[in-house]
Amino acid sequence: MRDVAVIGVGCTKFDELWDTALRQLIVDAGRKAIEDAGITGEEIDALYIGNMSAGRFVDQEHIASLISDYAGLAASFHTPATRVESACASGGVAFRQAVMAIASGLHDIVIAAGVEKMTDVLPSETTFTLATAADQEWETFFGATFPSLYAMMARRHMHDFGTTREQLAMVAVKNHKNGCKNPNAQFQKEITIQDVLESPIVADPLRLLDCSPITDGAAVTVLCSADIAKRYTDTPVYVVGSGHATDTIALHDRISLTTLYAAVFAARRAYQMAKIEPKDINVAEVHDCFTIAEILAIEDLGFVKKGEGGKATEEGLTAIGGKIPVNPSGGLKAAGHPVGATGIKQIVEIVYQLREEANGRQVKGAEIGLAHNVGGSGGSAVIHILKR
Amino acid sequence: MAAAARFWRKIPQRYNLIGTKCSACNKVYFPPRYICPVCRRAGKIEEFKLDGKGELVTYAVIYIAPRGFESQAPYIIGIVELDGGARVTTQIVDCDPKDVEIGMPVKAVFRKVNEDGESGVIYYGYKFTPMR
Ligand SMILES: [Zn+2]
Figure (tube, chains in turn orange, brown):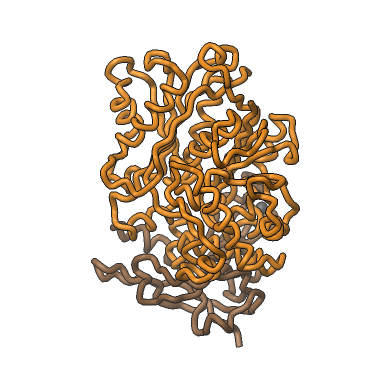
C-alpha cells in the first residue's frame, strides 16, 4: 500500500449563497485547490465528490458527470468521477475513496471534494431532506426530527453523567469564538451562554443555538502518492490514518445512546493505521452538528473519558490553547454545515493547521491532526489522521 | 408523495406491534428484521407479537415539528424499551412534558400519527402513554 499526501486545498465561503449554483460552488473551491497544489487538469486521474442530496436539494442527480463537466475535465479528458453519499459523512467518505484509490496504486493524483447547495428549497424541505438520514420508516414516520434524535442523546447524557445544559452551551460559545477568526465561516460573531439558553427551543433540551445552520458551500482537496508530493509542494500533509465504520441507522437500535460506536470503531481503525494514540493528536475537527455531538465526539475519540466531555469543555480543554483544541475552524456550528462539503472542509482546516496557515486560529506547533465526520445520528462515521 | 403500498405494507407492525424473534437466540426484533444480527444466516426468524408494555429510555420535546406534525407541537418523542428488549421511537402522549421521566413505565396505544396535508391521507400507528 502506498502512502498518500494532501498537496492542495480550497474552500468557498460557507453561507447562504443565493447567487451561486451548486456547479459554481464546486468549481470555485476546485480552482483554489488546484492552484494551491500547482497541478494541471490533465494530471487529475479521478474525482470523488461527497454530496448528500443534490436530488432533493436542487433536483439534480448524476452530479459526478455535472461536476467533471463544469470543472472543464469531462469534454477534454473524460476524467472518471464518482459521487459518494453517506449523509453528513459524505465528504469524509469521499476523501477515503480518494485515499484508497491512490494507496492501491490505481491512481496517482485524485481530487476529493464535497458540495451541498441547501438554500434552493424552502427550509421545511431542507429539514425534511436532512431527516432522511434517519430511518424514514421507524423514526421520522413517528414524528422524530433530526434535532430530536440528538436531543434524546443529550437527555440521556445529562441523566447518566450529570452533563449540564450550560456545558452544552459552552460548545457553541467556543465554536463561535473560533469562527470569528475564520474568514470562510458562516457566523463570525461571538455568542454567550445566555444567548444559547435563551434561544428558541427546537427539541428540548436542545435550542436553536445548539444546532448547526443550513449552509451552501464546497470544499476540495488534491491528493497524490506521497513519493511524488514534493514535486508539487514543500509542505505536503500526509494521510497517516483512515478509519470508517457503520452502526444501526436508527438510534433506538444502538446498544448505547451516549456513545457513537461508528465513531469509536472508525477512530480505533484510524489510530491503529497511524500507530498513534488519542493523546498524540494536537488538533481536531469534529462533527458538532449539535452541541451534544461535540461532547460525544471528544469522548468517543478517547480525548477524555466517557461522561467527562461536558466537564472538559467547561474547563477549556478543547479551546485553542487548551490541551486538545477542537474545531478551530468554528466547527459545523459556526463555520456552517453544507452537509456533503463538511467532511472535506474539516480536512482543509486540518491541512491549514498543519501547514501553520490558520492565522488567528492557529494551534501552535500542531503536527498531527484528526478529522471526525459523522453520518446521520451515528449510522456512519469516518475519521482521518493527518501529519505534516 | 409516496405510493400507498409503502404504508399498508407496514400495517401489521404499526397497528399491532408484530415484530420478529430469532428462535435460535431468542432475541426479539422490532421493527421486524429479515436476518438476525447475532446469528445471521444460522438464525431462524419468526413472527412475534409484542405486548406493548415497556419503559422510557430517553425523550425530547419537539417544538419545531416536521410537516404533517405541526398541529401536534409541542409533543414528546421518546425511545421505549419494550418487554423483550426491542426498542422503538415513538410519541409519548396523554401526559405533560414536566411529568415525564426516564425509566417511566409506558404502554402502547393505537392513534392517528400524522396527516398528509395535500392528499388528506391519515396515517395510524402506535404511540405510548404512561402506565398508571
Ligand atoms: Zn439469533
